[in-house]
Image (tube, rainbow, N blue to C red; front, top):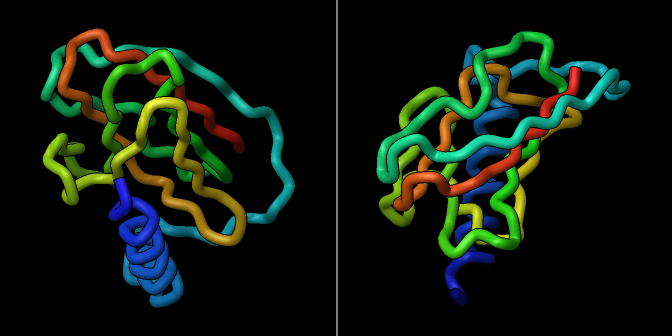
Length: 128
């Protein structure tokens, strides 16, 4: 869809402004060295119902959420609140894509995911 790149730029700018203002209590600036990267596969338990992908972790330095290429629909991600499958509410991850955050600032609170279909597979990565 043509709106996705623009939406990603706007979201990136808003997230950058939020991180720069340090307005969110769960954002920290960790060192850039990483230890082990953990990987876990899971599925959506009930389609249309948000669930936890990663628990809050003050030691988190990087994370990624992947919507595998075999998926037939988008996966949605949110920070500290239920992820919504309504377009424009949560971060939309198309099949075969992933969303990552790390480096100079990282969200360390709970991360949630949602998809329309029960058993929608996803993969999460987290580094400390």
